[in-house]
Image (cartoon, rainbow, N blue to C red; front, side, top):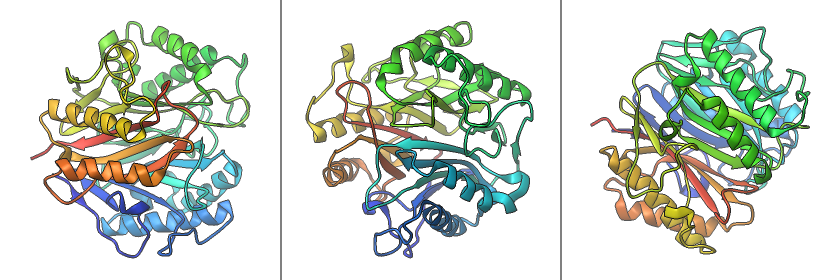
Length: 391
């Protein structure tokens, strides 16, 4: 079971998600810079970063935690505008944390609502077995303060790209080269922490456009050959966004686990061998790959039907959780990617209707939405999830 966090001081995204979720040793919280009026309190990127962090701090306090407990922090910036200023504001904010900074990743997305210039997605932990790490011989991506955070047997990596630590992308500027370099860096970081590429249990790949998808897929397959069986690639979310900085064609976020893992796949959901697994179970945790409306034979269900695709996507999530022995009530957090221009109100109605239909308890998961440039061909929405299956 998991516990929704309750706080009535701050605006919640369309009242669509729980304020946060507490499950096991982890807390999931997403925030932006809005106040109770529903509008951002600041207009500058620095001001919105500070306000968002203040909002996160209030939510973490409800769970008895603070900034030093954050393991992973995803920072979404529309158009990647103000990335340098956001990175500096984050560095200033976490300076007091010293060696306990989180694994930070900056991502440029297509848009947020209500004038928001930043949205943050945090995973925090109550575990005392938490350690940030940085390896001097390896560069950091823009905005990252460390290479990762170890929480017990989990490792949460900050975003990894092919830059030199000063924002300069390595030559040649080809997706195959950058993909190989990124995965080699991930392997090296894990090696320095006593793990290997084969310990990956979840990945997120952000690229500036679907035109890079074929080259990325080929290079990733080559690196994974001999590491993973084709039907056991880590669950993945491949998200296409406007910008990651000059000449950066890929930024990857990864989670690894130094223990037993089990691939969970539902016969009701299409499989993608050589690309990603539907989900992986680690103890009570179920990490679910990004799901969309693509069905068997790669046919898109409900093509051009936004509500129909939301229904199909959530049904796939539900089927995977049920295959693992859980129910929709066990989903603690979702991340929703909408192609730019989709009607958020229509999404909210369809999303809430689905959960209301199947939930036994009156609580929706924690989570967040954002607009992205593209998803899989003809898909309008993608949703990934984390479930906690303890009873």
